[in-house]
Image (tube, rainbow, N blue to C red; front, side, top):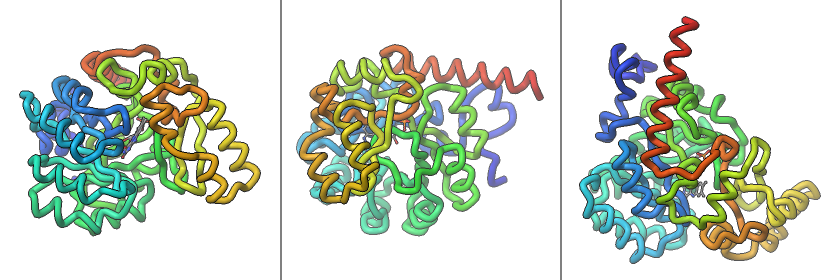
Length: 330
Ligand SMILES: Cc1cc2nc3c(=O)[nH]c(=O)nc-3n(C[C@H](O)[C@H](O)[C@H](O)COP(=O)(O)O)c2cc1C
């Protein structure tokens, strides 16, 4: 059955296993997202210890640093539940891929580009390959390229977005209907009620970014974590649409970029406004007014900085609470 995402009926009450979580060998169908300046080996290992798939975000690492992070993760008892996220937008993507494969990583999540160019390398190395997409068209292309799964990311998500501005609620079922490979829902998910909803839409797992960014083990700046925690439902905005749309917290820089967008700024003007290293300034250095504070609409749901284990415990409890509520009305 195409939409029979749960392994069997009894698993609904006892566990959250799906075909994908079984395939990946993880306890819960939850992926801690790869995030620049945020998801180093410490967060990935903490998430994996709590039963998720932990992703090291290569997007802000030089190849040697990535190797160090992978080796640190590999030295732990949860090495097999650790993958690497590689954005294809990186100039030195070949070197990042080489390090990832040399270090024997078997789970790779790619984003920001065409998976067709590099998919074969991952397949030859026996990797499980998931690619992040934001439209049905790109999901189909990822499947054709040989990907084993797609991450369907709605535009609620923190960080870089697709250009079509499709919400997770609408994107996930359409992607589920369009491809045969498993779909991982992302964008806007920060609590267990939403995990249950994503599985109801046909997703076989969820990928969670912003909620995991505000954890003790995340390597982003404490001020950035605080900024996530202090957000409301309307604290973020999508800017730099001509360059590459990105969802960030409203601050001086974001509002300037938003104004420029409203007044029809060209790509060159947006690039000039962006300057260099905004992501690092905002996320890693904690520059709350001038930096790019990538976070999603789900930041409004984040009320405290927790450990990855506490986040997972909370997600699971909320999931089962929502499941019980559903049973009462059915
Ligand atoms: C601080 C931050 C950095 C991110 N960096 C990356 C990245 O390097 N590569 C990537 O594929 N996605 C990146 N993302 C997107 C996440 O992987 C994930 O898909 C997204 O956060 C899911 O939406 P959510 O934030 O609502 O949970 C980033 C997101 C955030 C919040």
